[in-house]
Length: 390
Image 1 (cartoon, one colour):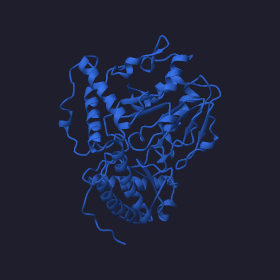
Image 2 (tube, rainbow, N blue to C red; image 1 turned 90 degrees about the vertical axis):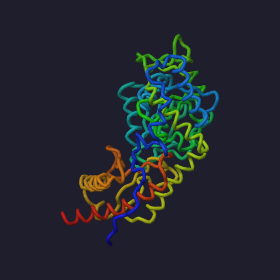
Image 3 (tube, rainbow, N blue to C red; image 1 turned 30 degrees about the vertical axis):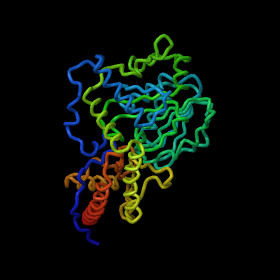
Image 4 (spheres, rainbow, N blue to C red; image 1 turned 135 degrees about the vertical axis):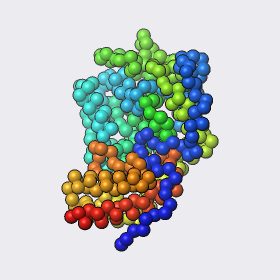
C-alpha cells in the first residue's frame, strides 16, 4: 500500500518530552514584565518569586500546610536536595522502571551509600511490584516514568499510616496527572516539563512530615550550600516565601508565571488534565488502528498520558537486531525533522528503540492528529528504503 504524502502539518512541530512545547499563543511579548537587571533579593524580585510560588499552589492545588520553594538545578536538583537532606533516619526503598528512577538508585547505593537500602527495579514498560514495599522505610519513586511511558495508577498503594516518608519525583506528572497529596511527603518537578517553562529551575514541595524530619534529623554527611534547608535545626522559612538559595533567572521566572497565568485562564487543573487526556486519546486511537506500532506500556492503567512511549512492532522491523531497529527509528525521525513536521520525538537514549510523543497540556490535540498521518507516511517510506537496501 502506498501512503500519500499528508497535506496538513502540525502547527507546532515540537513534541519533545523536555524542554516541552511552550503554551499555545506564546510569544516573546509574554516576557515583557520580566524583572531584568534587578536583584532577585530586592523587594520586587522577592515579590515575583513569591508570585510564582503562590500561583503554583493555586493551580496545582497544593494543600495549605505544604511548603513550596524554588530551587536550583531543575527537578534533579530538587530530588537530590530532598534525598541528601532527609534520608538516613530509617531504611529506604527506591523504585525504578526507567532511566531517571535508576539515577535515584545510583544516588542511594553508590553516593549516599545508605545501609540497608533496598531497590525494586522493573524493566521498561512495566511497574515494579508496588505490594512489596515496606512503608516502615522511606520511599523514593517517580510518579510518571518519562523514559518508559509508565506511571503509577494512583496513590492507593501508599498507606495513610506509613511510618516512612514518600519522596516523589513528579516532574512529568505535575499539572498533568492527579497527585495524591495526602500520600506524598515530598514532591518535586521542573518548569520545563508539563508547563513548557524554561530549564534549570526546580520546585521542591514539602509536607508537614518532611518538615518534621528536617527539624529532628541531622544527616551524618556534609551538605553543599544548595542543599541546605535548615539553620540551627529549624527550617529556613524564607526559602518558601520568595528567597532562593542561589540566583534564579528572572526571565525564566517571568516565563513560568506566564504559563501559570495561562493555566488559570483556561480553567486551572481540570482544564490541564482535560487537554492532556485528549492528547493521549489521539495516540490511543491511532495505535489501535495501526498495526506497525504499539505502546511500550501494555497496561493502559499504568500508561503515561504525557511522555507516551511506543515501539515498532512490524514483524519485518521488530525481527531485526536492536542496532537495526535503532537505525530504522533514527531514519524515520530524521525524515520528519527534515520535513519540519516533528522534532525531538525519539525514545530516550537508554530506552528501547522507539518513539516518544509528548502529550502534555501545552500541546494541541490537532497537532498530534496531524503528526499521526505523517508517522504513517514516514514509516512506509523508510520501510521501503530499508527493503531496497536489503
